Image (cartoon, rainbow over all chains, first blue to last red; front, side, top):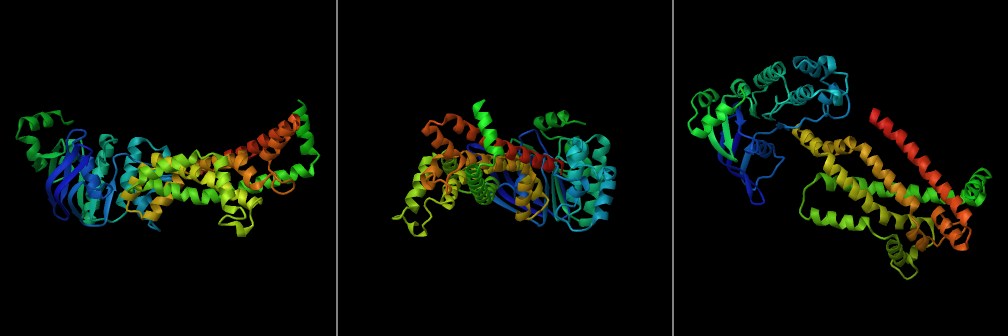
Length: 218
Length: 228
């Protein structure tokens, strides 16, 4: 569940996010889209609590898990990375690695992974933990189409198991269409359009939306 | 060449005074480095990982103290521990203990400032990732220290280097007393003032050798840590 009112984030005299309201039911999925600097990451960080708002209220259901845009490999093996801060559950970690086709790399150093592999590992690290709100900042940006499909499948399975609310940002229409039932498009920190992904993509309301949708990577 | 010969002679003849000076130097450097790191590393990690009001002012203050002239630190500690000073009753002036105190005053800001900078620059991604995984604050702090341990080891080496090479503060509070508080740097200063340049140079070479041995040992530790 998410309730947001009059949310603003300002850096000196530049407002990077100005969101009058946002509400999501438990279990709902939302994709965030918009050009670079439109406020997607800021919104996710505000929801995750890693950034303090300049004004407004954010209410979220705990526990919250958040995947930053930049993936990071902790010291140790791939398996040790997944099990960080968790006692036991080795088999579950291995199953998850299998699901994301990383099982053969379980004993390898996490720092030796490629960008796409590291991003899948980052997703793994979150999906082994339970949560009520899952926030993902461009979770497939470094993945090839096959790997991206694996991530989306793993997310769908996790959502079915936990019933969590999912908010993810993306530059890929396929991700928005497959992973979310709702799409919020941000423009210069403000909401430009909010609705079902299919509807927004097929019939963009304004000239700006038409140009944005046409420019989106298909 | 004379200095080198003299340095080797001093070392291999196991000159008792040289061994005593080396012992005092190592004891002082070990304790001042250890105490400074015990205070400075966690303090720097806290400053580097947290956002709070007055952080910028605190960092400026630490950066100013990083450049504190050793003689000023020595003078301050002398004033505190002299017979009429607030800690005069402890009777610590002209002892190795007070030399450690003076060195800590110089080294703690260095360790704190460098740790805060390293942690701030290199651990943003660690903090974001670890917090995003729902890990506890304690665990996040531990991860920050663990992930930047190679950098932190260089902070420790820096602290040791500063300690072993320091002369101003230790000569004021230690008094350069033979068989008691004389360390390598103050001995070099004394021999230079006496005109024994080659002997001073020999001591300088031994000090350099000591620093080299510590650095080589540390580089092995760094390699171990990297391979971990």
